[in-house]
Length: 196
Image (cartoon, rainbow, N blue to C red; front, side, top):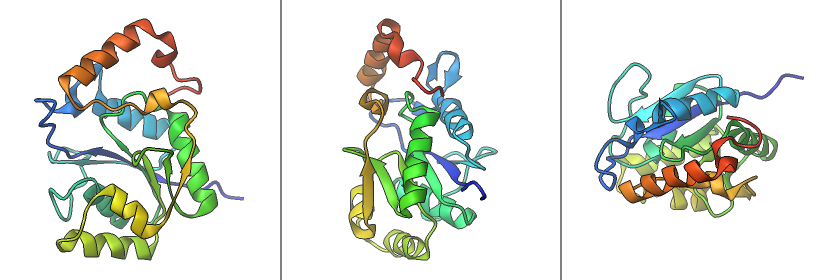
């Protein structure tokens, strides 16, 4: 029996306006958040890792409909390859390979969109024509481009995260400072239980 496959997507196309600087370039333990996210997806077993970003560097996957939010990155990645995707935001630096594998395993088993309970991202998205058509219609028009609406319109399942503490995201300098302070004092957050 062949092992199911998926592609990874780092959602790094936001404007980082609340942070005041590019979140993808923030450094944690000598590694940018972008490099950290790419490594987590690769360690989780992604066949390819795409970066949905405003900058067109070597590994960036350009949005077909720019500046329409995270759905643009999902859309471009689903069109780039036939595999399902697991997408994670660049500003969730504590996610582990185990977290990504957990989403993928549930999604592949259920053949549906899967997120963690009480979180819209990270997300597993099967590469189905119905989902690609929904994204095309929504992004090419004036439709609601929120992840929440995407989940409601396409049906989704949720799975419990192993550790809610790894689902924290950093949007502001205060969030970033709080995370760094927490990491300095909480060794359990420094190394996820199943490795990253």
